[in-house]
Length: 127
Image (spheres, one colour):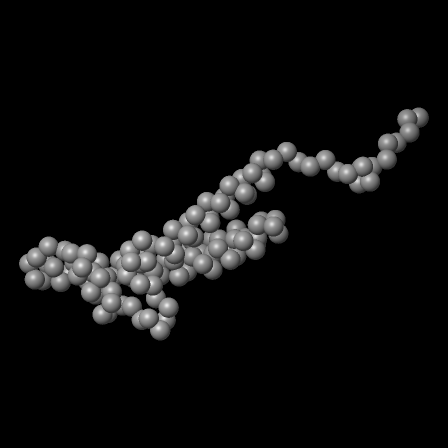
């Protein structure tokens, strides 16, 4: 799960300053988002293994029980089950990443700004 985060850090360092800080913050936010996805996957896997062992169908309620009993540590700030299932943290990060992509694309595709008159070189006399 670290590859996207590391790639965002590298990308942030190469971006213009107005986008670099947003990208650094977003890459930091991706760590808990991917952790929450892993926690949901782990709860579902535990329930799947129990269902196979007990010769029954997998249930969302069983995954919730595993999350609450075996994975979630409220003191660590882990999300409630409903928030975890909605993948709220990951969805928020992806929405912010999409918005940042739109801003960066608009910046890169915009025509270059003309320098102000004071920045333009003085015309040279023809001889």
